[in-house]
Length: 186
Ligand SMILES: Cc1cc2nc3c(=O)[nH]c(=O)nc-3n(C[C@H](O)[C@H](O)[C@H](O)COP(=O)(O)O)c2cc1C
Image 1 (tube, rainbow, N blue to C red):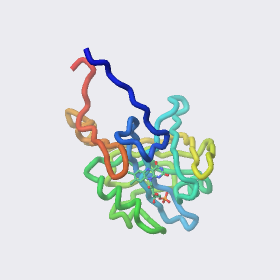
Image 2: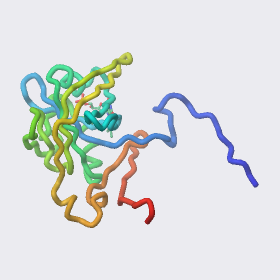
Image 3: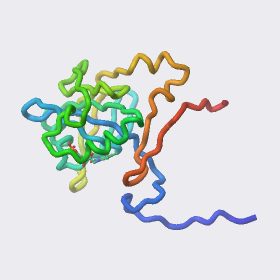
């Protein structure tokens, strides 16, 4: 029988094809010094602890998102469905100032923090800054989730994941979609 051959792969994530790691695509909202909103897509994001509920977010230090979180201390992680993929990509190219409306999206108040939620997204994690660690121009920000909200419809359909259409960054200009939830013993 043929043995599976392992080949070395580069260290630089930018060269990975295919990417062996995925990152869920989210839209992060923060507030600028003048209280206007800022929106940016991020995919270096993951849950890190249950109790307290901690998320880690990787961001370029020069980005408005990182600067706003370090200055003002709050953010909302908005969860878009894959139907917003083009809007998400386009939003990353918009000039600043870049309020939610500039991306063609609707800002609605959050429950506990100053940055807005995005109505067209399906779930929202409201967070406050906890810690951060820098690596050169990049920063890992640990934030505590203080409120969560989700579209009521997600709880009314047979498969919530089919409703959510969560999607993940694979490599430049390429994403993958979770089209349904699959039970382990299905
Ligand atoms: C799908 C997607 C995912 C992205 N993920 C990240 C990320 O995880 N971290 C990051 O620093 N930039 C990421 N970017 C790039 C930023 O969105 C982009 O540089 C943006 O203009 C930064 O906006 P800001 O300065 O308002 O934060 C991503 C872009 C796209 C399109």
